Image (cartoon, rainbow, N blue to C red; front, top):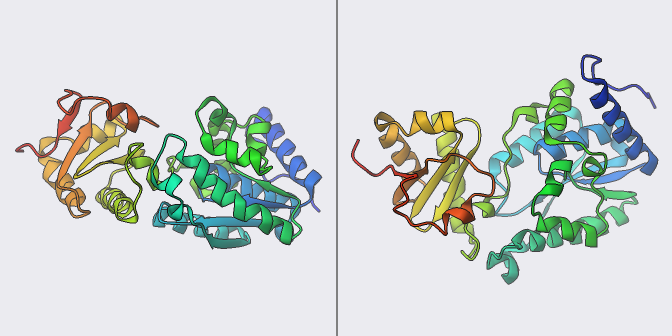
Length: 297
């Protein structure tokens, strides 16, 4: 197998060295099954694994459920097709687990327990040496209950182990021509519902349809449509918030989000904040940092 890397020399030597370590990590195991969502991290991880050990020794698995956005699935398939990545799709059943549906603070634990409970036996049946996820070094500083499920099932996290930050992964993905390098983070749709709000397919579809409509209008960067019953509360990057929150564009935003089934639309004036939904649920609706887009233009 060719020992060369496709990363150009223009990259910082530290990054080239990290990727060499990742290639060596995969080659030391010989084969791998990758939990593959098509996000920034898992796309990069799968592409390096493919180069390191070859297509016959890699399988990227997409877990499909109501919480997985259709557009993200399409991106995952596009990247796989572009790089010749072997992919398998399977359905996961977390929506039938009442512990997950009740949406507790550790909801992700039950989702990942379901996922790894299917992927680990699958890897064993195909004699793949290791199951890996795309957790990176930055994730270790955040509350990630899903990681506990991974540890319980023996899932490896080489990006975290080798101290790849999100910025590292984006830079290396760009150098490789992986189109996800600039893609905003996109956690599952259930993350748009406040903890304690029951997760249902209908609520997830409302959120997904609203976000898709806003993207079609031209919203770029980070975007979350937070579900608050009949109200959709929007989080965007500051530049997008200033543009789409302007009085002359509010009617367009209302129509797009209203077509998804929401009766009211608000915008969080603090902009996008990862994990910010549950802080908002503890605030009064009259908080001056929330812009009511239902007001007259």
